[in-house]
Structures are given as structure tokens and as C-alpha cells.
Image (spheres, rainbow, N blue to C red):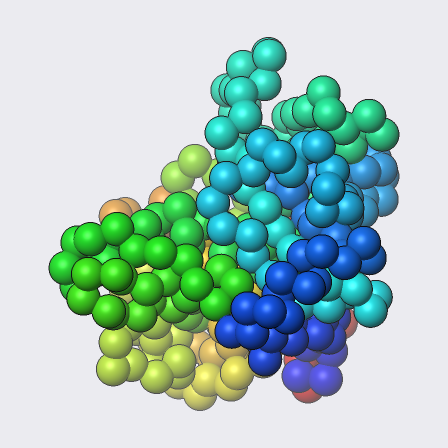
Length: 321
């Protein structure tokens, strides 16, 4: 797909400088370089500035806020010619306490008293379309990496506590020597069409009227194409024939790689699995166009910034090539 790089988190060419991760002296030198910067996270939220247009805050490594960080200092790569690290401050407790999430997305923001420039911690889902390509790639990488460290603190082979190495890109078990690497889970997400209509479904708990493309995890020993056919049939009872890969999107909630595909349906009758989804329906191009324009109060397409929204909008524009 020629427009694949336009998807949110689609990549900005960040120099990840993987060759430096095992070079301890080089990392130490970068940590002492006044030009180096650090992004900060709190319970999965990114420290950002701005309102309508957001920018990830890049702090000097001696910023007092970072003294409260715990866990590994992850080397993300080079950004604008300088080293970029990430630290986690999840142990911090805001004076107002942790807010209870209301609705589909956490739109609350937290201000740390040491951030005198007004920067706040904000949920990445709430600002998918407000970040530039470079900041989006940095945000997705940092969030996914800390989620992995948070859930993989112990060796899966022997159960001993593992230790971060390789600038945060690996964990090693000191007891049995097993190496563990960041996890990425492949998910097939499919734009299934039949003539002038596309197949959309919704899950329980979504906002009323919201529909999206069907999706599911790729299983061991399974191709992407087979996953598209299996998941579509399991969730909707629709048989899919030809499948074509279109584009991918890192989705750091917590660590998926969305594999966007176009599938051609061979059957029409929908029979949902209520354990998998709440409902599914065929939606014509005309109806979807009205929904994208906000003219159908009973149909809301997937949120902007998601690969589902990207696939649907490009289908409407005849840009799936």
C-alpha cells in the first residue's frame, strides 16, 4: 500500500542506534552528554506540552523530575542528533490521587509539581492525532517498552527475578542465564468487503454506535492470511476468500502489531459469536461516507488514529493500492 507510512505510529525514521545498546562505555558517555534528552512516562502516560497540538517533553537528564524515576533507563536512539532516553515515574502519587477513568478513553491529565513549564502526563489514546510522526513513534516505543518491563520482571523459564540489560532492550535471568526480549503480539485486522459494502463489528463496552473492522491475534503456526479468514469466520460467520496485506501499525496497548489486510467475502449471512463480539453488520460505502461526515447518529466509525479508521477512509477514497 503506497500510503502505508501515513498511518499513526507508522514510523518516522527514528535512528534507534541499536549498535550502541550493548556498548556500556558509549551509553555512559551519552548519559553524561548535556545534549542528551529523556522522555518521561507515568503509568503509561507521556509527559507532553501543548493542547491542540501536542509535543513530547524532552527533559535534560539532570532534570529534578527524573530523580524520582525507577526501573531501567531505556535508550530509544538518536533524535535530532542527540541521544534520547526514557524513564518511568509510575511510583509518583499525585496529590489529587489517581482519577477514575470515565468513558472509553482516559482524558484526565496529571501535573507534577516539578514540571514548572506546564507539561502534563496525558494518555496516548487521547492524543493519537495530535502528535507529529516522530513524537508518535517515540511515544509508541517508550510506552510498549515500559509495559513489557512491568509485566516481565521474572524469568519465564525458572521464575527468578530478571535484570534489564542492553540499555533496556533485553532482560537476562541471573539464575539460569535465559535472555528475554521485548514482546510484540501480531494481530490481523481486516477490511472485509463484498461489492459495495464492508463488514464492521462492535465489542461490548464500546461507545454506543461505534463500529470497527474485525480483528484477532495471529496464532502460532498460522499465516496472516489464514488468521484473517479464521477470525472473520469465528466472529461473524462470513467466509473470506482472497486476502491481501496492506499495511501495519504498532499499537502499544500494550504491545500489538496490527497487520492490516483486505479480504474479499464469499458469503453474506452474518452469524455472530456473542462471546467474541456484540454485533456485526454490512455497511455500504454511502452509509459509511455519511458516518465519517458525522451525519449518522447511529453509526460511528473507529477512532481517528487507529489503523481501522485508516483502512476504512482509504477504502472510501479508493486508495488501497
